[in-house]
Amino acid sequence: MAGKPIDLVRQQSQHKQAGVIDLMELGEWAGSIGISALTAAGIMWTGAKVVASKWLDSRFDSRLEAVKLEGQKQLEAVKLEGQSQLEAARHEHTGYIERMKFERSNLLDRSAKLNQREFEIIPAIWNAATSAHYAVLRLISRWQEGTNIHKMTEAHFEALLKDSPMKEHEKDELRGKTGYERTTYYSELQGWLRLREANEAVVRLNIATEEGTIFLQPETHDRIQAITDSIRKTYQYFRNNMVFELDEKLEDDPIDRYREVGDDEYQALAKYLRERYWTGDDKTAERSA
Image (tube, rainbow, N blue to C red; front, side, top):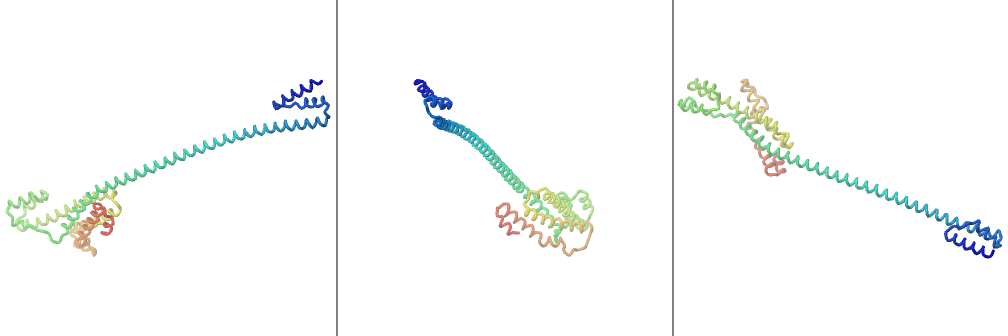
């Protein structure tokens, strides 16, 4: 009997070291060595508390580790999602910047092309306006230079006809005239020739403005349109009077008006275009309005 308690104590010591205590054996051991039931119950309760405490500690540590692991996983997932969203935002921002650069480049390129086109159109319109302006001035001039055809020799007369832009049937009709009739008829033909030249010049101006005004700056377009309308109106009024032999005079006669201010308007347009497009001084061009 003496050896059994010692062996049991050793065995329980080994179990304790392993973290496991058999409470029933502990009770038997306590009874075998004469410990009272109350004392044994106290020992057993203490042992149960130790075991329960270790078990709870183990469970708590296990749950705590699981919670930590789960929290770590969630944190990593949040970081990964945040990183993904950040990369997506960066990519979208980069794409937006590239689109803005592309659109700005297109706008600048388009603006440069329009400006280049405007510089190409302005000379063509100006040349047409110049031709029409002076053709109309010659047409409506009160003083027309005459040629005394009746005083010419036949050789001189034929040389004149050869260099004249008159049509062949008009030349033949003029040859059929003699004396002062030839001079008078030649003067009449020159009037119709000036009308034809003015008509051709106005038509060229109309074509140039219709083809080119969409490329012009608004102010430039308005200025060119104003003088074009004035030239066209003057020509049309004079032509109607000449063709239909009208002798009526309007209160605001476009012919008288163009005789008075037509050349001033033409020179003002020339100054504006020169200052705006060839000197680069927009403010000066605005003051010349």
